[in-house]
Structures are given as structure tokens and as C-alpha cells.
Image (cartoon, rainbow, N blue to C red):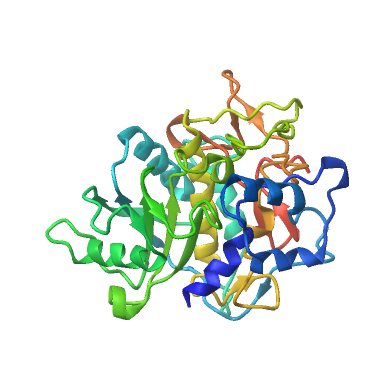
Amino acid sequence: MQKKKLLMYQFELLFLYIGLLNLRLCASVLSLSSSSLEQGDAGSIRWFREAKNYEGSSDLVDVEYHMGPVLASPISLYIIWYGHWNPVHQATIRDFIYSLSSASSSSSASYPSVSAWWRTVRLYTDQTGSNVTGTIDLSGQFYNFKYSHGADLSRLDVQSIIRNAVTSHPNGLPLDPQSGLYLVLTSIDVQVQDFCRAVCGFHYFTFPNVVGATVPYAWVGHSGAQCPGMCAYPFAWPKDYYGKPPPSTSTGGNNLMRPPNGDPGVDGMISVIAHELAEASTNPLVNAWYAGDDPTAPAEIADMCLGVYGTGGGGGYAGVVSKDSWGNGYNLNGVRGRRYLVQWVWDPVRRRCFGPNALD
């Protein structure tokens, strides 16, 4: 079953340059999800040049409902910090999680806010008409600083790491099949199967024989030392690329965007975390909301908008985003004055990529 997500993510988060003037929709883009990626930066450069994002008209493609569940009940999010983490970076990520829930961020984050971004995710419903929840509570954290499964992980190891967290005593996490969503975050020195070659993160559901129950989970890796050009764009650029990056902001120029929280790897993780949480909530068992006829290689609601952060985005151009007084790029406001750059997701009402910072 893990093969499904591997196939889907083979086109994910590889921000690909095709030229701003020639960007167009093409239904055949769906076939990218089942293609093989070349290893290393050279492969990401090739895909940056050739692939396209789903942006604009939906005449050729749309997300469809396949009758599976969505996460309609309030989510209890459990973070598993795997490896050695900088407390400053952990605080940046935690504040993003706190910013997602309407209840926690509406009074302290100005528009466009992270919680307003989540409202697009909330537009998705299940068979009963129940929407994805607007409540995401950080209910627990587990610190696996001893690298219980080493620093070179398989995809299945991620589920074993969850099992370790829910069976550890006395400071383990609860096994919560009713409302739990588990987020495994690996530190900068940890390698994960397909990380930097085909994926920056993924979501799936646990196997009862491994974890003890079926629960949705997601994994995201810190790419700062391994592949920031692939997983932290537009804050980094493939190191072997000899051309100039496309303009990253509305002011033009070929300079890379500066990260709003000071670390390209962590700021890049934020968008991947948002991506995976959105898809885990709208397609937790991989049978709910996605585009395409092949359920083994679906394009989910964040896949449809890879690399799009603002109006006009796509093809390597982030779109129109804001800059703070230090020149750092962002498009969303969070709690405690935080700012983040988060990719857009597919809006099922507008039938296009959308975020609260849209100009139209």
C-alpha cells in the first residue's frame, strides 16, 4: 500500500522551470506522478525546466470525491521530533501548528492568516456533508533524540517510529485512532527513503500490525543540509544549476527569496508540513479527494498547486507575495507575529489554486 504514495509524490515539490510566458495547463501533466525521477540536483533541475503546475482554468483537470472519509472531527495532532532539533526551529514549527486553528489564531494573526489559508481546506466534505475540521490541537509531543531507528530510514520505519512513541512509558504519546494525526519530523542529519530524490514529505495511514491501529500520519524531513534546492525552494536553488533562477517576487530580479524565519530548511519545511496536513485531512485513507483516474497515483489538493504561493505563480515563479522590512518573503501571518510562506491549495469552489493573499 505504501507504493501508492511513492508514485504520487514522484512529481511533488520539484519546482520546475518552463518559462513564465509559456506556462499553460495540460491534462497530460498527471502522467508526471508515475514517472521516475533522476537522482540528485541534476534531476530536480531537469524537472524544474519541464514540468508544469495546475494553475488557472480547471477545464482540463479538477479534484474529485471518491467517497472516502475526511478528518471532520477536531484533530489531535501529535508531533514526533526525531533526531537532534534546534529549539528555535521547533518553536517556529509549533507556532505554525498553533496558527492553523481558527480558535487559536483569529484574534492574534492579521489577514492573510494561516487559519484563513486552512479555510480552503475546510471546503472539502465527506458523504454526510461534514467539512474538514477547523480545529487542530497540538495534543502531544515526543522527543526521539536517541535515533531509535538510526539515521537512515525506510518508509516503513516511519510507522515503527510512531509505534515507539505510542508504546514508550512514561512519556509516550497516546494511540488515538478516534482523532489522532501523527506528524513525524526528521532532523537535518536524517536520511529517509526517497527523500531528496522523489519526496520532501508524504502522508499515509498506519498498519494495525505495525502500530496497533489505523491512524493517519505524515512525515516531513529537514532538507537544509541535503537538498534545500529541491525541498526549500524558493529559499534555495539546486546547487549544480548554472542558470539564473526565475523572479521570486513581484519586483522581479533573479535573487532567491529570503526566508521569513531565518532558516531556509525550516521555512521550507513549513510549506511541506502544510501540504501534508491539508492532504492528510482531505484524503486520510487515500480514497477521498484527489484528481486523476488512477488511485495508485493521485494528485491531491496540494499537489495541484506546487510552487504557487501567490497570484500569477507557477513554472518556478512563486507569485505575488509580501516582503517584510528585512526583505524576507511571506504570504501568511501566524500567531506571535510569525510570518510564513505556504503554497496554495486547490479550491473546490473556485476550481483553481487559491490562497488568502490572492489578488483576485
